[in-house]
Each structure stands twice: as structure tokens, then as C-alpha cells.
Image (tube, rainbow, N blue to C red; front, side):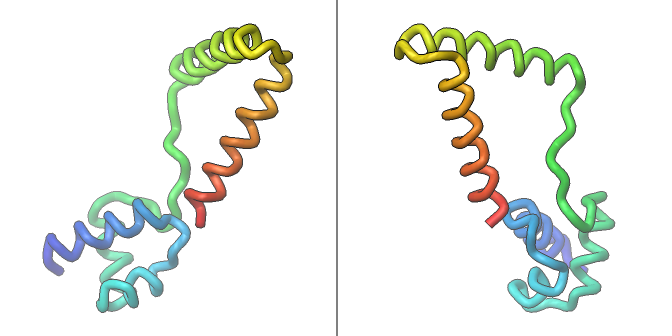
Length: 100
């Protein structure tokens, strides 16, 4: 199997993690076995999982988000809970968009 084909398989899996090996193979005009081999060769899981971050990074992100939430609540004269609702709705929309 050629490296360019591996690159295309990995790129497609990264952009569309919901696609099965068969659908990726059909899109690229190759056999499903090639997709599985390419993903194994590049040490990619058959199904994509969200990236895992360390606990320290997670805490830093949450602290930053809490600071933003308080600042936005003060700036727009709404409660921090209202800011949280807007953030959660937007994150859900983006996740749905990414999964589609």
C-alpha cells in the first residue's frame, strides 16, 4: 500500500471519524482491508475518540472558562448560569456539527 493512500485514509478518518472502514474505502476507491491496515500502521484507532488531556490541562481550561464566564456575566449583565447555558448549547452544536 502506498504512503499517499495511507495519508488520504488517515486524513479522511480525521475529518470524518463517524465513517466506517467500508465507507472510507468506497470514497477512496480501495478495499476496506487497506483502510484497516493503514489505520493500524499509523496507530490510529478504528473508531475515533476525543483527545485525552492531562488533569492539569483540564483544570487550567476549567479555570480559564470560569474566569471568562464571570467576566461575560458582568459585561453583559446576566447571571453566570445564563452564560453557562449559552456555552453548553454552543458546545453541543459544535459537537453535533463535528460528528455529522
